[in-house]
Length: 171
Image (cartoon, rainbow, N blue to C red; front, top):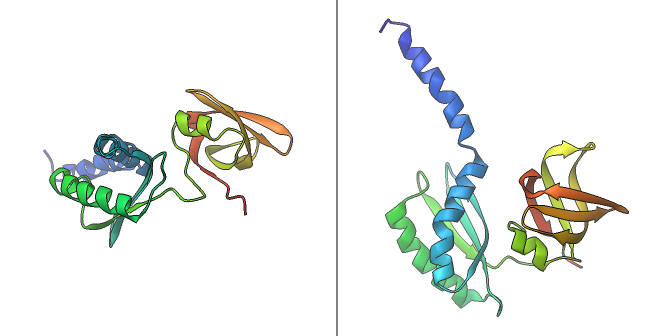
């Protein structure tokens, strides 16, 4: 190896770090945390993970009977112990467990199916017809697609196109 090999070695790692995106980290965390949350009798609706500085891992849970403070405390205690062993995020972070709230995130095909005929906001990964944000009524959903009506136009979207989505509160 020559003297100039060192900088190139560091450069080669840069694309790998870029590929480990926030979405990839979120997907891995969902896969890791969904089984213990389900074992407690709850649904893992969604999560947010922010690392660096004072990190934050926010978990949204739900169940048919709804969520109260004691549910959040139970899941928080159980996941804290689990996360101490698994250590999936670098550095220190605060764990928050919450109900999904009125602006409930939509992540899975089941979520979209359950909330058909409700108003939602969908943010696309890439613009489509010049739009990246669609607000309208969820018309239908299956395992791979969602149809949302926006200003009288139906948009059929592959789930892979969707960056994020949530219900719109009916205030």
